[in-house]
Length: 438
Image (cartoon, rainbow, N blue to C red; front, side, top):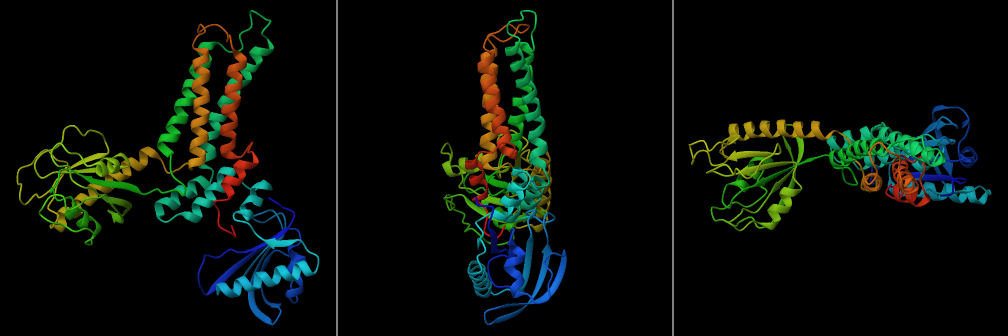
């Protein structure tokens, strides 16, 4: 990206509003705006009420002036609030750019994510925090916002840095062993010690990927999937938990043919609630199987018996149609979907299960890019362990150069997560996902 130009963009959300925000950043920020603002000193930090005159327009504006280096981008930055009509904001920007170019200034529209790119470029934030900004923008629930905020505040860095530091230490010892290869009595790191340290680090990295793996954008909602035999009352319970009639219910089996996903709030928890087709005897629904594979919590619904083949802390056994099947079938909870008290008790049980799952997996989500890099680094560690496994535990490495090359590749992958050693194509991938004005 070209960072020498002064950039300008609309930074408020799309659509009409009472106020809109235009952001300007770059070395010629003051020179660009000064001719259109009377009696305003843009070199002074603060908030100023002014009139902005350009062409035939004379608009009241509120200016937030942030001289370099104390701004988001570390450059001279001005944020201008005015009327929130999107057409008016776009026309102001076009007029400002035209005015600047006429006066020989280097000014242009900002690219997606360019303000945050400049913040990264000038050392205001690490690359993982920049991705946290993108996640904050994309968050659609309190849970997503919490995960994104955790990443922005350095959660990813705190997760990866200890592993990266440990890997660098092992690499240093391996390379020291290469330097002292002619000294028979010098073993910088034994094969057994290397395997032990790499096994520990790869295990931590795998836990990070499995526990904190996420999508892009971050979606922190738990998926609560209703499964069970056909005509077990899943759809009726699904509607009751949502608090509205979303799916058609019928006494005949097979009414629900596809997995249906709806956002909902259960026991104060934001969730994705999934209704699935019922299994018919030995015929298992493929759609239901796929939904269960993606589930955080599975509600196995059956009015008759508990399925002993389903085990694990993410499965709750719900005996449905309690009013028609009075005997307890060993379920975690018994419900009648038409009894609001039963539904409320089930919601409480689900909320507690969600809290338990959330506590075990943490509040941080890795992006797909970060997941791929973490998995690549872990594979490098495993390959290095494989090479060293042929050596005696107390001896040095017989193929240290190959091990060092793998560890260096793994270290590069981990560094690319936090931006310590990011190639240009990685930066392009990260910042292309932003919207303009951020």
